[in-house]
Length: 248
Image 1 (cartoon, rainbow, N blue to C red):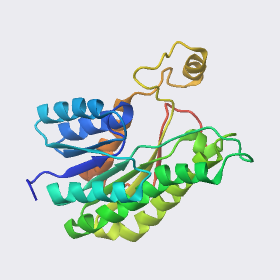
Image 2 (cartoon, helix red, strand yellow):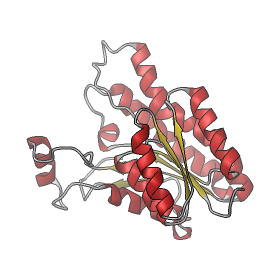
Image 3 (spheres, one colour):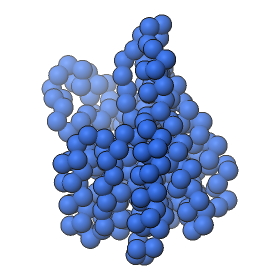
Image 4 (tube, rainbow, N blue to C red):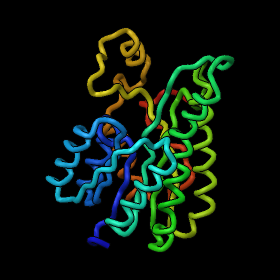
C-alpha cells in the first residue's frame, strides 16, 4: 500500500452529504477517493481540505451510471492505495416520472446510477476488504424510497434493491470482518437551498427535533459505522431523521 492509512471511496463527494463524510473521514485519518460527475472544481476544493487535514486525496470524475467508468474508478483507487477499506455509495439521482409513461430507458438510467453502481463498486472493493479481514460498506436509501412515493417508482425500487443487497452482503461477508449497512436520512437541504420556503418550513415544523438535518449528522453516523466500536452493527437500516416516525 502507498501508506498505512485506510482508504475511503465516497461517491458524490464534491458537495453536501458526501463532502461532509469525506472531510470527517479525512479528519479520522483516512485517505479519500473523491467522486463527482460534473463539478470538478467542487471536488478540488474538498481535496484541498482533505490534504490540509493530513490525508491523501485523489479525484475520480465519472458517471457512476456507466459500468466501465465506475469499474475503472475503483481500479484506479486500488492501484494507488492498495485497497478501498470503506466504500460509501452516496450518489444518486431522483427524477420524477409517472409510472405509466416513464420510458424503460429512463428507468434503467435510475437503476444503473442508484443500484448498479453500488453493486459494481462492492464487487470491486470486497476482495481487498476480505484479504485485509476488515471493511465497511455503507449505502444510502431515503424516507420516500422506503414508504413509496408517487411519481418516483424507479427511485423507490432502486433504493429498495440497495436495502436488499445490504442485508445479503452483511450475511455473506460479516465473518470476513466486513460490515454492510444502509443509512436513511431525513430532510437534508443542500447547502445552497433556501430553507425559508414553505416546503422546508413545513418539514422543520413537523420534525420532533425542531430542525432539519446537516451533513455533520450523517457524517457522525458514518464515523460510528467505520469505527471499531461500530463493528457489531451489521445489516442494519439506520434512520437519521430527527425522530420522524418511519416504516422500514
